[in-house]
Length: 230
Image (cartoon, rainbow, N blue to C red; front, side, top):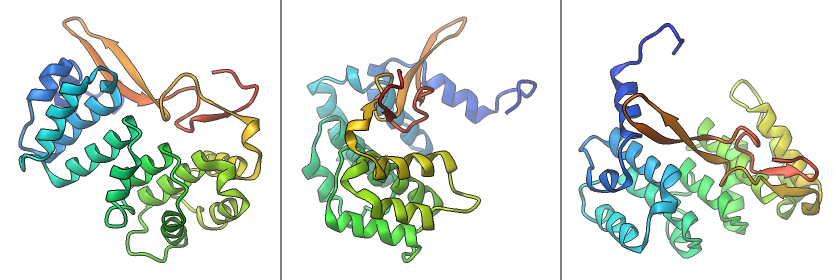
């Protein structure tokens, strides 16, 4: 949307949800999967640090209620596993959900260097599986970059050979190749974000908003060469 174009109804509603309090987001779940997903993203990317044990129980109860779209439930389980450092929950979703971008990103955030997972990711990069969609392939490259030297030069070779073309993110590709072919000691975690995402505070004339966006320092690639300051 250009500066001259007014926001659409969808954009206005999306922006309005970011002005809601965390408590209101937890208790207000519309029927439409689009808005359920938006609320879940706001809670788990922009508000997760505010979720105490009672809030997590409420969220888990909602996910088990049958009222929430199954894809939103899947997203919440993946991101909840990341926040709670809960590898068993993430592994429960393998292999049925492991080709979906939400699962791939969560596995990278938890540094899940599992041989069976890596085999699936190789198949995705090579295009040997029906789910070889561009979003999934991009998340595989990002997750391999998060793992870095743990997966080594072979992962770099796969990215160099198969993550190419119009849909490829060249900056991400170069970052992952560098991460996989250099020692882990040459990299430091970005201190400005959590897993490549930052909370975005916006002030309006009537109400402040808390949303989330990609980190401007690392560009969503949350390991920086040592010596680069966040």
